[in-house]
Image (cartoon, rainbow, N blue to C red; front, side, top):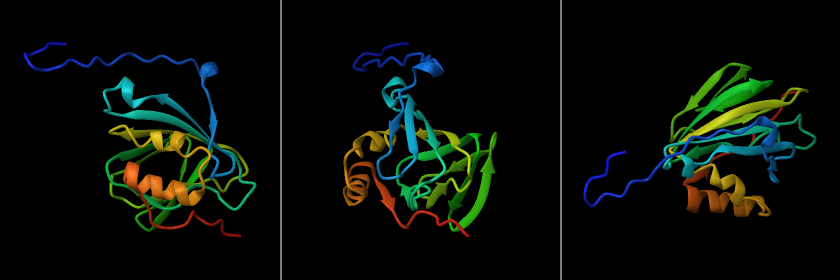
Length: 166
């Protein structure tokens, strides 16, 4: 990387992570949801971050997060296994393994796992930063999470989680 006078050089680094080495973390406010940050924003100079999300069939009232808007990041979902119900800008549809869903910043959206099998998605935030909200939410109440998301991450919750039709 070339350096010009007065400019600092920030190196990005290659990332290799064996599947067996992944650290999974529970998402307290969404029962049965687990995340692993696979590529951190610090690894990419903040350009993007990638995380894996697994959502087990729900044992409680929440099948996914509430409807929300990311004010500063686009969010890209790649379905690896299972099926997700998406709600984007008032429309609902199902995405299955090998499907891709792109949600531009400023767009109201959510997802849920209504099936009897686990959902596994890879989520990319570009630019990076919003993935940190997951680790910051550990041990907080839902009201604290909503306020933190709004003030620290510019993520605005605009509605409830999706409900399963009987």
